[in-house]
Image 1 (cartoon, rainbow over the protein chains, first blue to last red):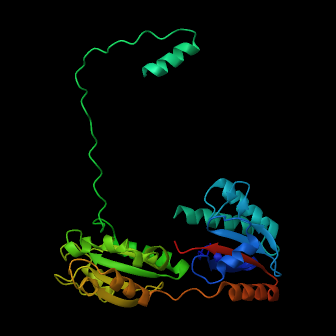
Image 2: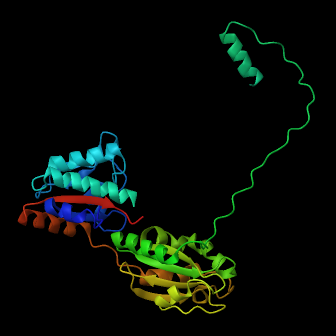
Length: 105
Length: 204
């Protein structure tokens, strides 16, 4: 998700923070604030600026991780739709397309 | 179909199984065995090494980890021992968390030598394998010959402690504490009227 392909679009709406759950001190404590169980990696949560969770990458079929199939793209889109304030629908379509394109590389 | 399965099928259809009969002697069936797959070679002899290295750099950049280029050849005795030391306890997580490993075939010192030179490596007979550490931008950070990392007792066995020490010395520093990074992100999001996209990952 830190791919240069999608980073500019994400930056329009989000401050993106990647935490290395294996190596960063304090990472597991931070994860526990938002996870009720081990969700696998990568796992994403979108927060408001007060740290309140808006939506997570845990969809109807579990954690989508890095989206790679239609149901996962759909949940990723749901996440973005729930959180969007600055992103347009066209941005979201472009963002999903970027993720799909990254998967095909 | 085995006899017990045949009995079950017949019972379900209301019939009974015929009494067991001795099977007629038959010639032993020919045993067709597939040839076992060729063992995967440590150094891919057909790969485009430049592409391999470029892909490793791109991948390492995502997690800001190092790249270890292992220049070597499949028929070199010491090169062939490298997988053993990779499995040593001292090397735990070195190639899952800290390094992307790229093994580049140099054949009989007749392949990829110019590529090696571009990383500051001049390969000579008896000097294989050779290791080059790159940062996630592709900058050369360190070099070591295989001979520098072998056991004093046995010059064709890698010393796990020496090898791990070399890798530890040049690996990327640990990521910063998660909580201050997270707090900074929240503060920035507030200032810029944005949200925080927080994702947990690992460098594997």
